[in-house]
Length: 191
Image (cartoon, rainbow, N blue to C red; front, side, top):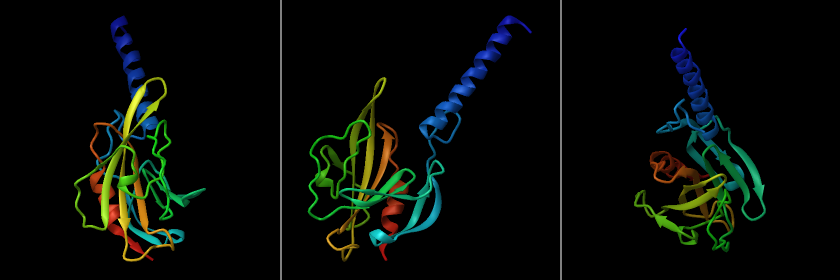
């Protein structure tokens, strides 16, 4: 085998392995890092302790629905790329911008420190917004969290009337997860 051909095979293999590792580490679906336009749908999930059923739940990165307990929010459901929670109606959000993965907890678009309303119209009961945040590791990276704030005819849980759905960690400048977030938000119903 010639030196140049061997050199091309070795470096090509390294590139292929590096591309695959990058795709796995970044949560992308393709070997060259492309992001799926839509996630698989696992169907309906009852968030019984939130008093809500989500009829359309996307599953990304093979994540299964899991619950953690937060001091302020109470039960917080992590469902792959998005999170669902109910904050107390009198919750006051931290006015500081989120940084390095600390996304903050919000119950309305007005509480987002640098929020921007999105013009996705699914009726007055759902408000969509996004907020940029920055992570610093070896370099600066900007991302956006996309939110749906869902109001119901009555509070799902006493004193907690707005369901917050947050789609997290979308690289700034990349397409918003509009179809997936809207499908989740419009499928929310009271138990």
